[in-house]
Amino acid sequence: MIITRELNQQPYLTVWENMRQFTADRTPATTDELWFVQHPPVFTQGQGGRPEHVLNPHNIPIVHTDRGGQVTYHGPGQAVVYTLIDLRRRRMTIRQLVSALEQSVIALLAEYQLTAQNRCDAPGVYLNDAKICSLGLRIRHGCAYHGLALNVAMDLSPFSFINPCGHPNLRVTQLTDYYPEITIEQLRAPLQRQLQHHIDQQYPSV
Image (cartoon, rainbow, N blue to C red; front, side):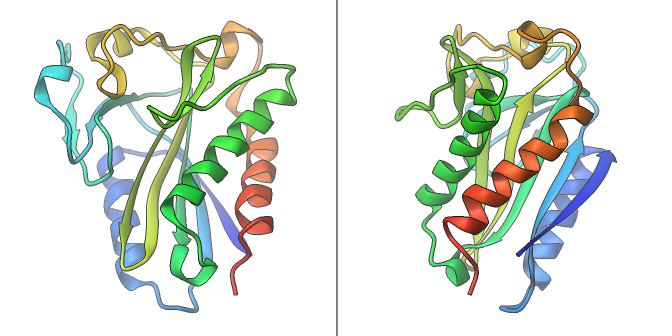
């Protein structure tokens, strides 16, 4: 079982602190959760992030966070899903969780007749060689938090202010490039369904 929460738009720092507190407070009986949220414009720099990958922030705040990976951008119109999952209880590895998240997004895009792929050298989901979904996770005491960020209907220009995920010249895309009228609200239910399937059905909690 996984509980889903809709947080609407909230500052990154607020939700990050709530994720850390949730993970610190959880017990072996705590139900896993998915948090759906959007953030005001912010760059987040992962634990191993290198400052040279921020080319010019243009007054967008930079938060040094505790997830893995390099720098990425969050903003309105991006579907962020935080995956608060007890890996130990599910007997999952972090690689299995990453795969479940990637396959959830790939399956979601297939519902819209879009053929997406993952890449072994750079976690995430790619559509026509452009990144449409970023992943970043943190594991503490066998429990995961952070999650995925799917570009839906947003201003993509801030991605040009950075080397997205540490890759110079990485192209970035979003769903409105293919379906101009699509909204996050339309995607929420099918994305939730795919995540439930790929996490809970393949790797059930016990």
